Length: 261
Ligand SMILES: Nc1ncnc2c1ncn2[C@@H]1O[C@H](COP(=O)(O)OP(=O)(O)OP(=O)(O)O)[C@@H](O)[C@H]1O
Ligand SMILES: [Mg+2]
Image 1 (cartoon, rainbow, N blue to C red):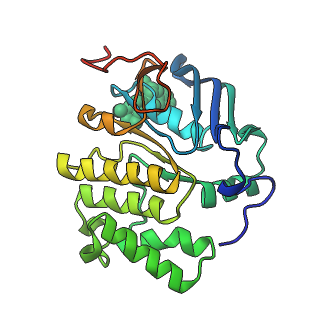
Image 2 (tube, rainbow, N blue to C red):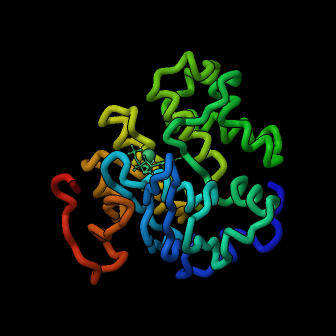
């Protein structure tokens, strides 16, 4: 794998307790037909290595908007998003490419698979772009297709796959790159409860075994207790709802019962 450049250091060199991504007083407004939509309001959020964070909230509450800013795909109207302490707003195009290629994996709500490529090629493409050798690429691609249970669908194009299968391919694509952080937007929205629990189990395993960080949005409350921290998103604001395990025993503990209406 080619080296990340221009101060985007590797996972090994990162301080254990420093956040990998940090949102500081982040807001995002959209101007539409003379009206201002406050999609995200004054959000503070820290993502540390080895953390599995879930964002839960109603449709339109601001989850995708927030996730896109954490990924550097969109910029805040006000506030800052830091990657390893550096404001992403000052990143060069080259740094963004390095970031997306090696450090941050994104699972899009819309899957964003390339329609003319097979499932196998979709998973393999980012590794090809990143310059991984053929042997390593095929090993990883087959490995992750197996993990998401779609080895038998490797030759299918996206339109020859069900919605849930396309979703699992998009997860396999993000996982294959072994990024430091995976930002996953409704990664189980198209899956039945068994497959959804398996994907969250896979995320949990990556966090505990590979010390990756994961932020996933979900509507499915049965999946929440697999994560370390649960934030409820409501009207663009986030609230820490529950902290699990040994992450922070002093944080307020409350089950995210009922709707956050
Ligand atoms: N490009 C845009 N222009 C104007 N308003 C937008 C735009 N994108 C999103 N919004 C608005 O911002 C708010 C937050 O949208 P967002 O997509 O972040 O919600 P979400 O929590 O991801 O919803 P869902 O669960 O349905 O995916 C919504 O009210 C939405 O209508
Ligand atoms: Mg969304």
